[in-house]
Image (cartoon, rainbow, N blue to C red; front, side, top):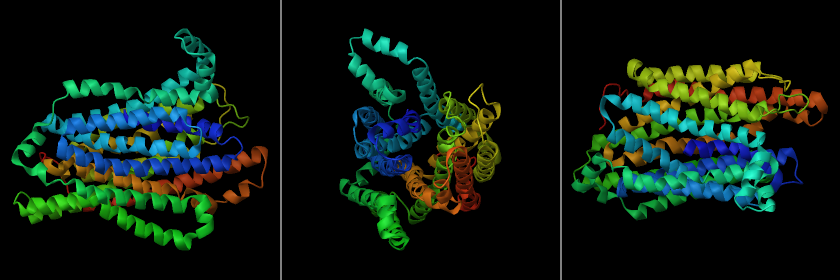
Length: 501
């Protein structure tokens, strides 16, 4: 569900900003596109800790239902915005729920269906989450191919022609946004049929859940404000005024505040638990180390995905020399989603055989290779027929960069005891989003190194080819973040063969 919500923005973002910023240039719309993604990632980082905290204090099921409701409803509301800032604000609130849903879902599933089946369960989590991306691609493809039929269907249920035109204008992005509210209906079944984690219930009976305090969430609020401050200072309009000399120290200070704030609930919890005798000092040190290393591992994967598979569809739309898209965006989304579904299903099984650290290292090698292959070997598309190599390389980059999202549901639960599992996972996976958000805002600077200023001086086909070359090189370099992961993983604990704490 959360992957479907994430997958919507690459499809609806461009046409939505065209409608909301009709008098602006493509460059301005592109800047807003990047800023909204960054704000979404900050919201996910905040939501991961916030809803993880709720899951550890109130229970996995209740917190997950609230998280799903939040991201579904506020995604649907995006269909009715008229300004870019409104779009960004709703995406921020929606991302709070999305960030929490992953941490809660992984904790709940691992605690209910643990044991020897955990590798299969992790693979299913990764594969199922990427079904959301597949659904967005198929839905958009069908929508664009059948706008006339859909218009007739909407009219037949009593919706006025004016409303139908409003929803279906510009590739039907508003209707796609409305479809993002559908997961809210699942909450009814979750609350009735999904059992609470027996491991969490045991923690509640022992009294350990009482060590969570609401006042500690002030740290999360401070972290969110600091993170948004970082995003603000790197937006092109502000950066042009303050320069790198101000932006860099603001970023460092903001990151320190964000790290302190997001970790505050866990630190305060462990202080109270240690005073009560339920947490030992060596266990506390291990948890803190796991939080920091886990966040680093997630940041590598998330930034790598943003700089490769998340950009594949948008980048491929510029391959046609005559501007003919032929639904190429949807086809690339579908290809990357199919690759992600297959590879995430397999990855945890490989990790159970080779070990966690070696598997993560190999995933980084393969993801980096797939990014280079995709961006350096696809330079044109005629718009006629199905481009075999483009689809093949999209399948590979989608699968290999998404492989980490089958790995993390297996590895992250092993790093934390039940009492802090949801919060710990929420921090690791989603603080990585904040790092990725900051990295994504450096893309404009990265493009300038490869001659983006020269693009504006060109026209027609020469401009298109130069733009492709600049972006291909920039995305290839950005994907080198996987080199950091190849080193960092050897400082992480090896948990192969160990049961959940």
